Image 1 (cartoon, rainbow, N blue to C red):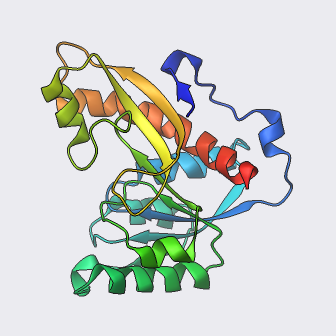
Image 2: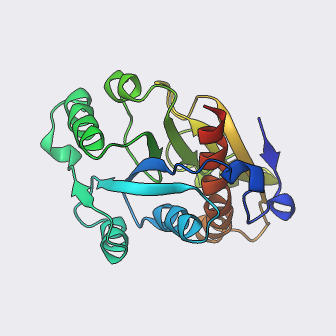
Length: 211
């Protein structure tokens, strides 16, 4: 586990982590605003992440992530989970799209659906998720609200490899964020997102380099 406090997180990837000349081919999955998609795209443009985004998959028709992808000329594919009776059917369609776009690593950047063995088997140890807590604390939905309710003094965000159990799998990187007495879920979420945007690209590079 790598625990990274905000003051110690470098906005740049170390030089040796960009030594490979071959960009990693990413497929990004998002359900909402797509701010982490944007962070990954900016890290690529700035030379901080040696990768290219092959496709964005989104499951909500109104997800702003699709607008962000269109602005960057990244192919965006809607796979609406409401059209599938079983999670396995949804994941089979997702795998088909990812493979069609030659994806090597799958990045769940605000993907609000549980995955099945279908997706895990298609990309073993190559699916990354970001979660707004210091796992293993506060798994699942409303992690930020859980932290405030528990009256913890520190929470944060975690980038980890995806396993079948929700919000589990090997931790790649974490960033700690203090919980202030006056925090609301909205204010705390804003500060956590700042750290998400910093560590997600770094964790992708770290994971890709380790394989």
